[in-house]
Image 1: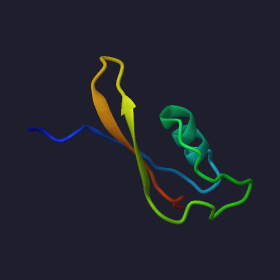
Image 2: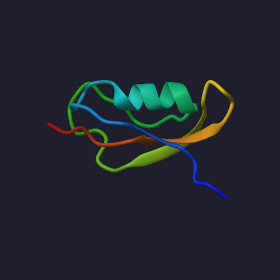
Image 3: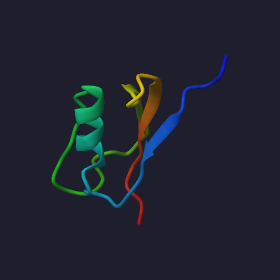
Image 4: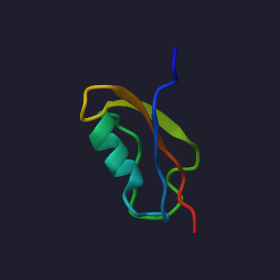
Length: 63
């Protein structure tokens, strides 16, 4: 069995990665208007355009 495709949200702190993660996965991960809210990796499942499932990963911001 093959592994799920992996999609990672990577970017600067306070860029909206967690808000996008919540919108795509239906999660209710904490967000804030200041850097450093996400301090560890979070993952969820999404459906790709062709209906296949994929793992979506929200990572802490990087500079």
